[in-house]
Length: 459
Image 1 (tube, rainbow, N blue to C red):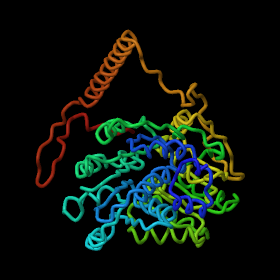
Image 2 (cartoon, helix red, strand yellow):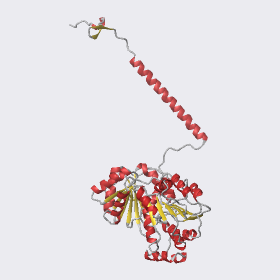
Image 3 (cartoon, one colour):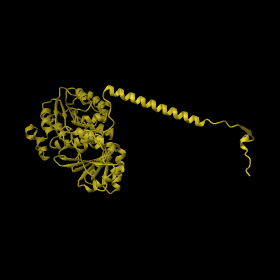
Image 4 (cartoon, helix red, strand yellow):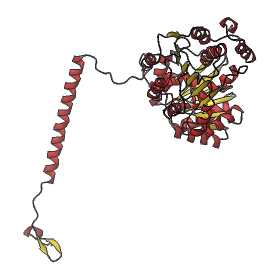
């Protein structure tokens, strides 16, 4: 129960209004640890309630220790604009009965306007790394009074190449602060390095990692021949399956635009979300989805994190996710808050091994399903290994095997060279013919006649 966490009464009032009584596992572990003022290294997946896990102890501290004349007291960094907006929305709900102010700072908005907002001295700043670093370097913000630094979805920031910007921002922060780093996985290369740079003697909280099975999500796969086949099956799934809202994931922006247009052509109410849209365009699409004006969203992985829309009951992986972590974040958009959902992945021959690797990573086997009347030619691999991947050429392991393979290859090259030389010699022999004597006459060349050109007439 939240009553056992000794939170400020105004926060308890907000939680009661939101009908939250039981903390999630990450909240029950992280909140008491954060209230001891220790740095935290937390592994928790999207949708586990981690936003409240860092907002509640922070808000509690501000209510217990007001500092009206200080500068920014907390900085929350998130990898995407959508996640920044989601954190801000959650903040407004939890701080509804307080006077604590926050603002968000993201790319795609007017720098001058943001500078004016920062002059109003909000206690909490929620931002993407690139834009907030720009403000710090141009002296429109200082973090000398900072008490809290939160790095949310740090693994995603590393995937997006933001680690250098994050570390530069950390150098601007006050050294005497409490820092909390949240990541879906701690095994991601570089996470430990960043943690060592920004955290001091942290307490580690492991809960709801990305490899945990999503028991409330049915995970299926369809075999597909090509993009045209996938198009037809996507339309059939969206027409035949029962769902309130659906997400269709692709790997490329150009494919998102093409597929979104195709679905609209097929009379489906579809929108598109990817990184090349302006912030106003993103906001417009998200509002359409939330208000029910569209019920299908075609998106790249920019939407896999920080996207919190109620009623998503179907996730279609038109393109298979490139990594296990990305797959888990995609399907995590459904089956939230105790609800059930379905995730369907379309698998071509070149995506089979990727599917097998993801199944092995999350320790879940997908169920094969078929779309009646749209069965393709691809029936899956004829032979698979124990890890689920297709059987290919066996790679040499020992030095002797490698040496034997090298000698065999050398022998094959010699044989091929001899065959080539033989063919070249035969070709040269065919080209060698007796020379024909010619002489020039006028504007052309005529062949000199010989005695063999004249034959006696037959009687």
